Image 1 (cartoon, rainbow, N blue to C red):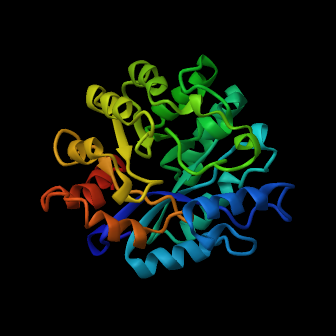
Image 2 (image 1 turned 180 degrees about the vertical axis):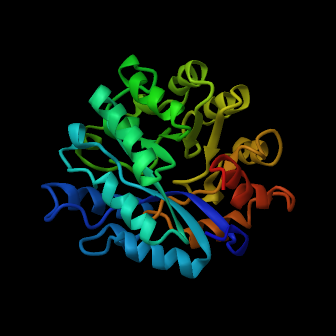
Length: 291
């Protein structure tokens, strides 16, 4: 990957299709609700991009993409996308894709073993956690064996935070509980694993200031700005991105729910300083990915 030739690194993209044959009951309805929330047809039946299609799109845009599935089998009943397959597809498109993985922390020692293997044998650079979808508090000691493996292997832990479109408008929110994704629950993790790079995904609404506080206080915590169009960012979020946290903010879209084209277009309108823009779009991510 020649990052000098790329305009940005998108720190937050999803691998959705294909998975493991026909999708499980309810999956298409889940994706259709996401499409409605984001006003994006990508979630409708037959419209989700494959990893190869994602790579082709990002190559055309001259943007590198961190890509991952979400292991939420236990809570949703949707089979996860094989971490090995995502990593292999990323390797086939290594000029543009950066492989992350996802493991339900309830898998305990087995999950920790898988994490080590994925880093050592498949070049995985980080792990995506989705407390809302996976149904756990990040500071639950159940997850600590997995965090230990991630820290020891020098990988990144990426935590969904706050509310975005997941489960929005569905009956009972599809059983997803927002309380799990308060960023304050990542604070203990940052204390107990100070050598693990942690990224809070999204502006953490309605706990935006809580997320900013954790990132300001803990040297190993960063924020990716995905899941929201920048035109909806709270003013304090933009203020911190322009100042105190300018070296800790990362561009992320939430592809395919939100496209980088839309995100970048709206990013131009929110008053980010000229000297800060390249930090957010590429340099901060490049530094923590060690690329």
